[in-house]
Length: 224
Ligand SMILES: N[C@@H](CCC(=O)N[C@@H](CS)C(=O)NCC(=O)O)C(=O)O
Image (cartoon, rainbow, N blue to C red; front, side, top):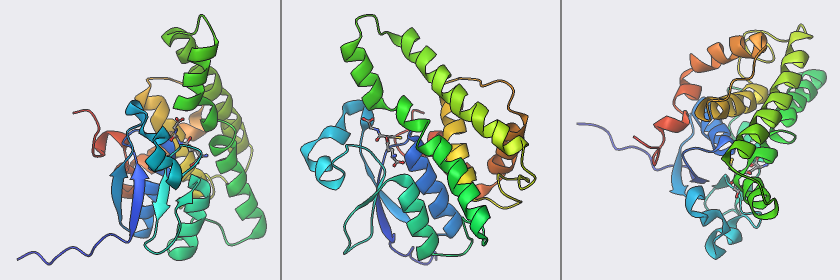
């Protein structure tokens, strides 16, 4: 007889496809933590519902809730929370400069790349520019994914701290965010050329069960 599964430690407001939710799924997997997912259907605009805006007034997922505590938003803050909640395995290096490097690579993509390609930006562009269509959105995505990933590639290629992962040979917060952007380019069938270091690091991520289990297409609600 199977022993009963322990109840999930967190509630995660999530959608199958999103980059920022993927980050939290990977971190939960790495840490051996569990969350019950509450689906916020971005395609149906549920992130802007009155009910969800009480969870995150910005109208964006993920939000992580530990029973008895207010919701946590912002994937980078959630990753750091999980890293302190369950320190093993660590998502940040032990040295000061290493931590700053990892946070900086993560922010290049989470703060300066990803926000530009979110549904709210698409919605705004579509409503404010007369000629904005699917081709214009695709060109926009290629521009901003390309800018962010090319800059990260240069950063990784120039630094001896880069190993099988972004910083050494174990996954850090930087890999979680890098993979969250690359899986979106795969989903949208966008290729950013000239990124051999990222391609190599993604081989390490793809081979890691914590990343593989977080693949958008493997999540509840993903198209069959
Ligand atoms: N900086 C936030 C970004 C959150 C975010 O933009 N999430 C997207 C999904 S990946 C979202 O919910 N977008 C809703 C919208 O743009 O309407 C984080 O890292 O958590």
